[in-house]
Every structure is written in C-alpha cells, then in structure tokens.
Length: 324
Image 1 (tube, rainbow, N blue to C red):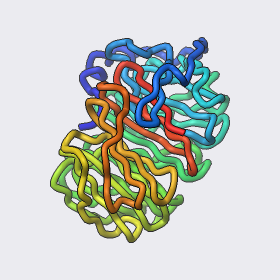
Image 2 (cartoon, rainbow, N blue to C red):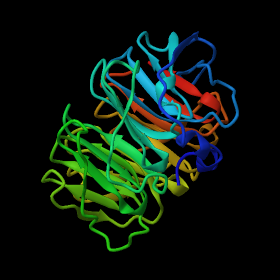
Image 3 (tube, one colour):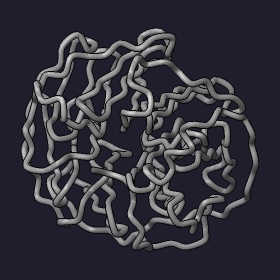
C-alpha cells in the first residue's frame, strides 16, 4: 500500500475535529539542494517526522498544491509555499486541481473536502461512505463538475454536479477487500483505476471493465498521451499500455523498490517515484527506464507534472522536489 498509513492511524484524532480556515505562510527557496535535475524545496513541514506529503496537483508551471498531513500551495513555482490549514483536520491522500481557485482532496475517514476560494475555506462533501471507516486514496477531476474518487474496498465514487452528490460505482470485482490506490481520467467518460487490479471505464462510470491482473499492487497511474499509459507499484513494477489502458504489458524496470506514483511532462518523458528516494525515468516513451539521483533517501509518495514541465515530487517529512 502506498504512502505512510501508520502516520494516518496516528493522526485519526485529527479527523474528528472541525474545519477551521486558518492560513499561515512560510518562505522557501527552490535552490536549497539539487541532484539529478531535482531541486529540494522547503515547506513548513520539511524535516518534520510523520508530517508526510502524499500527493500533488498542478494547474500551471507555477501553481501547485501538495497534501498529506498538511496542505500547501504555491503560485510562484515553489519559491513560497502557504499553509492551507482549513483542511488539516483530515489526513489526505489525494488532490485534484480544477483551476486557480477550486480543488478537491480525499483521504482518511472517507473524507472529501473542496475549496472554491484557493483554500481560504473548505467544505466537507457528503459521499455516502461510512465516515471514519474508509480510506479514500486518490481523486481525479477531468472537468469542473466531474470527479472520480477511489479507495479501499474497491470504492469508486463519482460526482457529476461539482460535489453536490456522489454516486458509488459498481466494482467489476466481487472481492470487496480490493484496493484502488490511483486513478487517471482522459475525460469525463474515460478513466483508469489502479490497485490490486487495473480497471477501466469508457462510459462515464456506468460500467468498469477489468483490464489487467498485475503481479504486484499498483500505486499510481498516468497517461502520456491518449494511447500511452503507465502504472507503477510494488517490486518496482511498471506496466505500460499503448491502447489507452485497454491492455497492459510489463516494462523492464530499473528498480525493485516500491514505486508510489508516476507522471509524464511529455509524450516521451515520464518520472516514477518511490520509497527510499528512488526516481526512475524514461525519455523514449517507456521503452527503457533508468534511475535518477533524487538527493534524498526519504520515501517519495507522489509526483505531478505539467505538460512540458515542470514536475513536483512529494514525500515523507514534508519533502518536496522540483524538476524543471
């Protein structure tokens, strides 16, 4: 399972609190360290044990959000990060940015929160899940009104009205213990969910089809183009698809370390990040992968890239890495 869920268990008490919008600020420099093209950035949580960051989402080269134990935002490429404390009562595992002001995040306790004012205030959305008993792992919003959320017990949630209501999607598997840990959507109708299995919908969630039964748990999924997709996970496993996620095959990996997330700034270049600071990359559309120096031994839990770059990787102890 991706990310530090021991941290989540230690932080369950936070879920029981309310949402109090408080915003503080901290200045950071993107040039605090550089290795393999990756530069270390500082947030208020940098170096703080158990204050892990789990996911990132960007709408431009300069505007990104990262979330986990805390939630931070930058509008200047990471030179400055602001703490969005309105969401801190919930330990979060996934985030999706819809624009300059609107973001969804999901996490422990079946929590889904939304902001429409750049984090000044947050609203807890009702999903119909058993609050406090379900972990939601990832969220992807292909349009301003449509968002998909996945998690434990094969959970797939969908809203088509901007979060006013959520509908549970039918899991293609009979195993209720199944875990989905990542999701990527091309559009409001076509998405890929990854975890113990790879599942795909092409009709807006009306039905999901099992696309692959991998040898290891998969933690992240992304697509470099409408046809070229990758999913990564345990044992350094990398699967690739050349038909938009309909079929998958194993790609030769450069590591056996658990990979947690993958993102592609171009159709030929992708980065996968994982535990112990491992980063592997491809520059030829996934034909070959090689390791990159990250400059850290901390676990990296997620990565997000803007088309054409840059990329942001996040991880344990508030780690944020930047690649131009």
